[in-house]
Image 1 (spheres, rainbow over the protein chains, first blue to last red):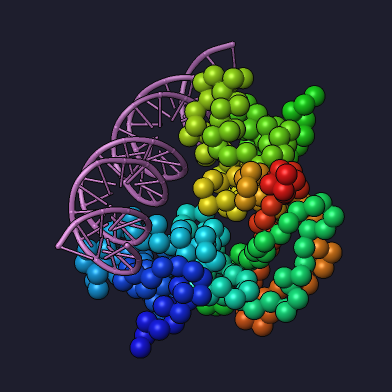
Image 2 (cartoon, protein in one colour; image 1 turned 120 degrees about the horizontal axis):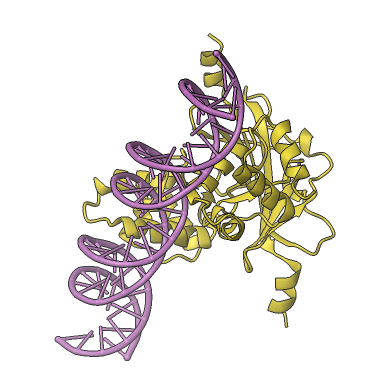
Length: 140
Length: 140
DNA sequence: ATTTGCATTGGAAACATTACAATTTTATAC
DNA sequence: GTATAAAATTGTAATGTTTCCAATGCAAAT
């Protein structure tokens, strides 16, 4: 049952399930490539021909508001979504544009701005540079 | 001479100065509030009535490419610019939307993606939550 | 079966960003 | 200082993305 995880995630986050919502969550969980709204829309249009892009926008925003997905604003040209919500950081290759998940030391989330009265809900860490593949290509 | 710092910055970054470029850099240095393209444009239109928004776009992109300013993609609704390029982190208040500068944790440079062959050029750290002012307002 | 309240749809509108050709400004050479 | 070439700026048009909204569809509750 491929949709089981998707449904579980929605329920755990208090999001009312629907065909579209399950399909979108399922797509995110099955494609950990940080897709954009358009990528999700194009891919799912095949299974759900009536799917509206507005629904994808609404649904992904809803998911993000409920903490069911992460909204990534790393690349200024495109907004990406990540179905993996366990704490991790990202690396964006400035050459190929791909976005990678990276592990960080276990305690990095404890690092906080101190003494200014900020109530921190989310910590975001990302890096930009050149990935391994592109580094090899560029040096050959 | 208010424009001295702006001119110095441009020259240090190898950017050919012009009236518009100096004014835009001067504005960023004098307004550490992380303005958007539009805010810069509206503010500077008063002094330079012929200023084109295209110029503001081109100039800020040029600055960012030369490392003269930081492009901040923290808020998905708006792209902001920061004239302070010394390493620091940011805090965005989800209630009032303001963006604050915060000190980086002392050991931020230790926190790196390790062993995956990534060549890291930039490190970005930011937090989201509720700022002191809004926290007080919300609890009263 | 009817009502009520969300969710979805699709087209239109709003908005942000970029492309480009014309113009102006600045730099360089004479 | 003038002529020439190069670069920067401008304004409009084009593009692309995101949101709005009214109509429709669906599902749970009575």
